Length: 122
Image (cartoon, rainbow, N blue to C red; front, side, top):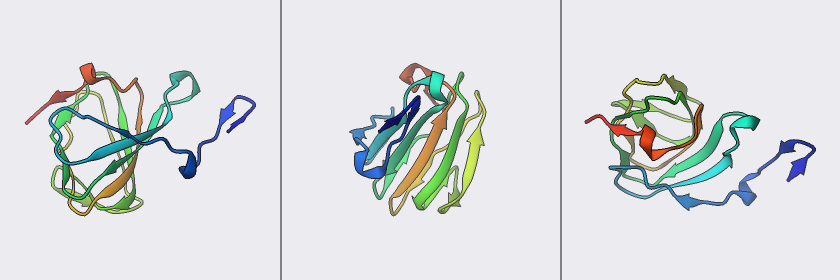
């Protein structure tokens, strides 16, 4: 739905797509809420199925922020539950990310989601 220059997306409207992160294992999908950097940061909800894993990696250009919405999200061995929020600066290695029982995470990026700005660091 659009109100003037504001776009509003609600869960029933989310369009889920496979999210093929390099080196990942398990099922990962994402619903992009904003892809227009002129309207704010890139925003998406990512679903990690039980047992999904994203390897430790680094983004050279993008700041990334995470808000755990549901489940348990493990970053570099530290477990985060619903409500946990953390940020990662460009050039900072983060992960591996794991979701033993599955998780839903809101993530924000300061740059376009771009596979060329993703280097595996394991």
